[in-house]
Length: 390
Image (cartoon, rainbow, N blue to C red; front, side):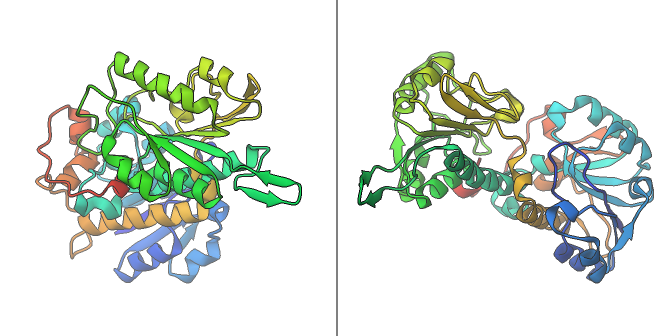
């Protein structure tokens, strides 16, 4: 099988979809791997690294898409790239099908089989394929560093000849994978950390990291989706949580927001009124900025200074740590392909298998995944740990 890896062209993207270590594994299994020239340079994987493990470095970008069996990408392809793809080609990438309906339709008409890394079900046997958790962990780690760098104060308690300085107060909103990593990182930096999440079952994890859990009594008992995400709450429940968050924002030096709902606009957690009540020089790091933000006045891609508070709206944080982000993505992708490729080296689309069915967006000119067909899927027992959730 010919496996091709193009250079990513999206804004703010430095990652590469496959690393030399994974290339070596594919080559050993008898596959031909082609990588576009310079594809890994921004993530510190140069062409020579790929050549050393048996990959072919290709200058012609068009042939990467038109003359291959399998295309591995990070981001969804452009319309021009889709037009180059031949019928029967398989594409693996982060497609985000619900947000890219027109692109899905074009891929379906082109009869390209698309496996979307963001659609992998969150079940125990798919944990090694869970790229969303891998990337969320990086984003959570980096968010704490960004907040600390922007803050004009110490993070840890400091005892000096001039007096004792209190540790910074950090509030993390959302205790999924990104939130837990933000909590752990802020704690390692010496801050006093507290965290809020609508799912009471994450309290133990938050406290195990040395943080205080902010509790808000909820009338709704079921606050979590089957995949481990926080559910969207009724408006009265949202207002109740905002009141509590407001009080904790007032005393926080850094607020990190991580709440996202797949396929929907992120919930509003920090209103402009809350920002006005924060102290001068406080920092908000909004990890949901790309989808609109958890803070009412976040400006995606910018660090805004409003009401004497710095509001950071970073985009594609995993790409800022491209070396390890690429490594994790490649391992997740390799695990998925190991699951799909048979002994003869061909991809088998067994739609009786939950992982294959939910991850396959289009195949042979048809929509497949329940995510895009709208049909309900009988999910197997997840057996998840909280560490896999976001």
